Amino acid sequence: QIINAVYGSGLENAPSQFVERAADKGHKVHSEIDAYLTSRKMGETKEFKVWLDWSGFGITNVYCAYLSEHIVSAKTKYGSFAGTVDFYSNGWIYDWKTSKTATRKQVEKWQMQLSMYCYALRQIGNIVNEPLKIVHITDKVEVIYVDYLGDEWVEETVRKYYASEKVESKPETSLQTVDEQALAKFGNVLKQIADLEKSIEPIREQIKA
Image 1 (tube, rainbow, N blue to C red):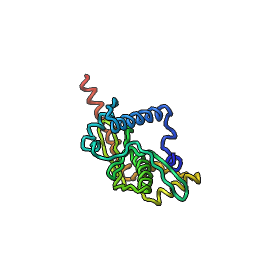
Image 2 (image 1 turned 60 degrees about the vertical axis):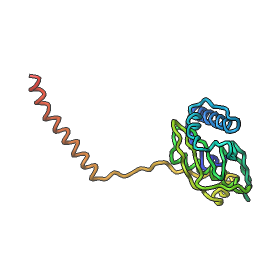
Image 3 (image 1 turned 90 degrees about the horizontal axis):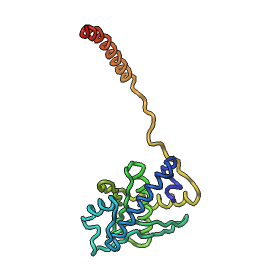
Image 4 (image 1 turned 90 degrees about the vertical axis):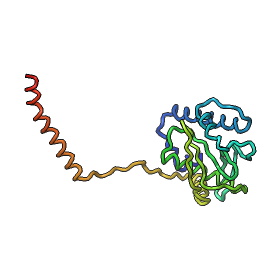
């Protein structure tokens, strides 16, 4: 809520039914992972099964202390905030993501989210190691490592939120100039193609005859 209000969600122009469908799928996968971690209940989604195969490296070790879907909160001089950490264990934060893609913009938003969790966990005395870990689950698992954006960034984001300040997002791409020599070369090639087509026509007629 805070990040979208300040920096925009990037989904303002997306059809609502697609946004809702993606959110429902993400919620289901999160719930299945949490149910497995807390009671070893098996999930049904493809993403859960992919996650389970990947998690064999030890993340779900029953002897390992961890927090799953854990609500954290923090206070700043500008106001308070809260959020739900997907998974925290031995000083590491993991965030499950189920979107089909992981664009630069998406990763930036995920980094913001994890940075706010990191701030909250550290405020109550937890150790948080860096880098922070985004676990992107599709047909496979990709772990994306991001840095903590820092206490000042978190506090300034909270200040902007309570002051109703919105950061204007920059477009993904910008217009590029085309080299004049490249244009001239392209025009010459097109002329050569046209000349060759003219020379082919008499030969084609001769073959027909």
